[in-house]
Image (cartoon, rainbow, N blue to C red; front, side):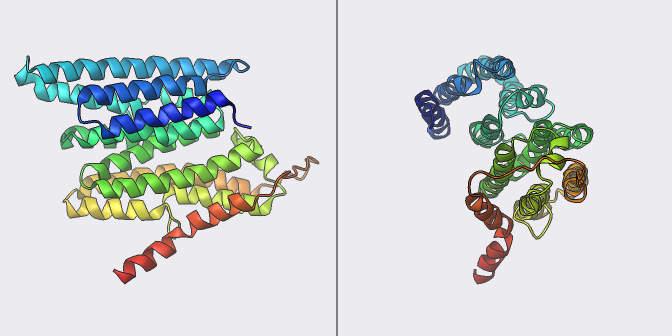
Length: 334
């Protein structure tokens, strides 16, 4: 049963995001972000788990710092005190939004906070908490600045994710990589960003549902817990390949649309760089998936039994993985 306080704070968290994305004033947007922040901290905190409390405190301090910088830049830009410096303060505002969503090189808090949260809160951080900062970035047009952010996000996520054994940190660096793709689509066409975000959210939900169901947090646990559940192991593998953007899975579609959009706007070099760096992230996805699929821990007598019916999770997995075929069929009719 869901505790009443969780329902209350989840509702106010969503209201805060909706206030931000629907507000016509900068102050209203800032207020929405603060309502969102003050609502999500109680969801992250847990009196029985000190790691959750530590993660929620780190998140609160980082987000408060970003909100303060955002408010400062809004006041300066609105008052027209320093007209010659407007571009600089615009860049500061964008930096505060990038800090809020965890884009590189403002990602310093993201893996550490993810490591201290449970899977439900990780899902919130990876998906819902990106919406408001992404929408606020839409109002800005600083292509050179965002090009550097995209390059940093791709580079750092590819290099830092390779040696990780914690699945939460792997998903954190994966998120940084996807932020680079989302920003690149956001700069030119918002509808492609929406498609990318929805597909990324669906695939993330599938992966995190499996991790939560089997209580898996580290790479070693995947060999043990999924040993005798071959259908779950297969879906686990396919979802990671979908997250990496391999065809014919659903995760390939938004990357395909983004690459097409960037090439149409004569950004060939940055497109090649993004594809090459995404291959690095695909490497550590494949390391997880093929190791899980091929390694059998036969010496372990531990039998993990699924207590509840898994058909709902399997159905969602099937729809998300085979979605690309249905989407391409729809495109053929138009």
